[in-house]
Each structure stands twice: as C-alpha cells, then as structure tokens.
Image (cartoon, rainbow, N blue to C red):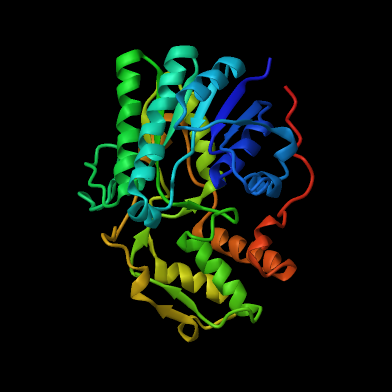
Length: 345
C-alpha cells in the first residue's frame, strides 16, 4: 500500500513543492487548509505545480486540537509534515500574539494529536535559521546557540524545542529541519527575493520605475525550495529522529542578489533601486550562513540549484505572470499545466 503523508501549510511554497515530491514517490497526500472567505486562493500554488487535483484537502486549524485529532485519526498518516506558520518576520512584530499562537503553540497541538491518536507516525517540524538571530558563530550548525531577534524567531524556537521535548519524553519519531532561506517562483511577494524579482520584472515591462528595499547589506544563505523539501523527506526516512541544518553553506548580500536579477533583464540596478528606511526591521539579523555537514553525512543531502539559477528562474516566472496579468491576480497564472502523475510502485 502507498504511504500517506499529512501536510499542514500545504498551500504554501514548501507545501506545494513537498506535495509534488511525495506524489512522484507514490504517496497519498492529504493537506490541512484553514477555511477562508477567499475560496480558491489558498490552493493557487498547488495549481501552479499541477498537483491540485492529486491531493486531498481537509479543513482544519493548528489552533484547534480537536480538529487535528479528528484528521489524524481519520487519515492515519505515516508521516506528518508541519509547515504551517505565520511565517513573515515583519508581520510578527505587528501580530506577535497571533504569531506565538500559530507558529509556537500550533506545533504542540500537532504533536499532541500525533501522541494521542497516531504515535507511530513520523513527524517533521519546519524550524528556521531565524532562530540563530544575533549569530554566536560565523557559520551556524546544530550546536550553535540560538539568539532569536523577532517574535517569529522566538515562536519558531519554541516549536523547535517542543519537538525535541516530545521526541525525548514520548519517543516520537520527531525531527526538525533548521532550514535557511529557501526561495522559488512560488515565494510570496512580501519576501525580499520575490519582491526583487517581481519588482525587476515590473520595471522591465514598464509597470514601475523603482524598487524600494531596506537593508541591502544583510547577508543570507539562500537555496531553492525544491532542494529543501527533498531534505525534509529524507529526514523522515532515517531510523532515528534528529535535527538537521539545511543550507547551501554560501552567504550572499541582498545587494548582490539584486544585481543578479537586474542583470538578467539587462537593467542597471543603480538607476532603479531605492533604499527606504521604512523597510528596516526593528532588530536586524545581519548575517546567516548554515553548515549542512551533518545532513550530508547522515543521508547524503546536498543542494542542486545555485542562487543565480534560482533568481533567474524567479525573474522569468514573474515576467511570464506579469505579461499575462500585471495586477495581483497574476499570481494565479500557472507555471505548469496538467496534473502531476504519480510514480509507479
């Protein structure tokens, strides 16, 4: 029989790519979605990748333990991937309580549902490099002390440690992936990489004349979401649960990332890029650089897509979307058409 995976946050970037990966591996994929008045919008990333018709979507909420217990009991998943969160750092200062409830306490609810109803299921928690914050070491590994610098990072740190606690207290096969920044054409436009690629495409098409950003000297370790969801799956195939840093081991400034995007469309960055203090964070994370050596040694994971390839892919996708429909609804334009085909066996 096919394995079954349950994904929270299935309508996000990682949820869509993970769904495609698992379907290719022959899984049955079930996703939890929170009901919204914006019917159909939440599923658009799944539609982009052509997998919407191949996944089962169920109403549920990380803040509703009863709904989680019901879903886990009815679906009996072999693997549970918790990708749901209030995941935008800037919003976490504006909505810190919501962020704490969803991004922190929500993890406990998922773990508790598994413990009570399906303790044999394997669990993946999406931890974040933002937990390192004010970095204590030049290159961050699983042993590097955490120093979170935003309500989002603090909430993620709780989710990380409660996963460790349930693993050690109840013997759950519960692993955390400490993922560094990972992007794709499916990234939301509020995140800096997509803000850049969308902005550059708008300038090229004559829809805008400038791109406003905050601290462009901040450095990040950027990878591709398709590579990183592969690491999530690999973690849950291990005999023993553990925590792993997933990163490229290369750090790049926002400035240099912008240069790649502008140059790809033959634009001069200095003519269009505007530094706006309104976009500075209250507490900045200046540098993040991950050490993925443990994941490489344990199960052979390595990134396959470099930064330049990823950014140019994102720019091309935004050019395609904006050429079809320059308004916000352009995000509904599929990148690929047709339902994904499951691999045999």
